[in-house]
Amino acid sequence: MKSINRRNFLRHSGLGLAAAALAPHWLSCSSSDDTTGSPFKNIGIQLFTLRDLLAQDAKMVLENVGKIGYKHVETFGVNTENNSFWGLPLADLTKILKDNNLKTHSGHYDLTNYFTKGSTQPEDLDKYIEIAHTLDQKYIVAPVPPMNDLNGLTASDYQYFAEQLNAAGELSKKAGIKMAYHNHFWEFRPFGNGTKGLDILIAFTDPELVDFELDIYWTVKAGEKPQTYFEKYPNRFPMWHIKDMDRNFSDPLEVPQANPRTGKREPMQLEEIFKQIKYTEVGSGSIDFANIIRFDEQSGLKYAFVEQDEIYMPDKFESIKKSYDYVQRNLAG
Image (cartoon, rainbow, N blue to C red; front, side, top):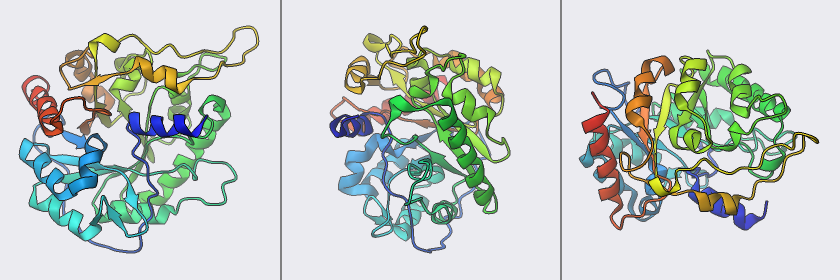
């Protein structure tokens, strides 16, 4: 994969990756799980949605997120050089969250090296666990496998990812934190026997150590039904990304499959794939959330997050308010 393709993909797919190690710094955010209302009434937001604004003024962004009514945020992008998120030292972030009645139950942490066989620069899981504990997060989420060879991922690679998730889950369990994995579309590419990468991850991970965060958009865009996975794997999806699909870009992705005669896969061309993709505010697109949310208990849902990988409205706060308002009117119950 050419580097320009990778850069574009990172921008368009909600990864928001940065190295995520932090020097020892034990603080308390004193947050706890929401105890009243549904996960949709207590909707959160994946802050990658507002990444450009965060880079300009993170405090202002969090203040506006709280004013709109979001109850919690999902973090991304720890800066290991100065121990901060988006220019905010960790102590400042915990204070701003508290001042705006926001909690953080989960964060995306870059586990690329940890998932790479033979890597000489593995992530320091102790530091990931430390920062998640500091923020009182309940989940450390791996948002993506190694990006250097998506076309070359095999069933054995997914088994290895599962083993690594289990090992990380053993470490994080001592701090009351679980590991989780967030999907995109390539996890649904079938292997020779019809088994998909996501199925392998679920089958080979310990439910006591590893959960999953289902991205509703990417699942539907891959041609799958979220409901099928909730039925097939009950209680394995305590987190959802609520993300909607532009009605004019609603066809499933035309991703090359394995050749039935040779078993070889045609390579995915990410630049072409992303011509098939456009997002929209929740409730404005083609995804049938009213049907999907009927499976929230079966999935084991605890936390739901609005996410929009690209916002096309001039006012991004107006965009996330539109999504928030739809969730409260139509999904919160």
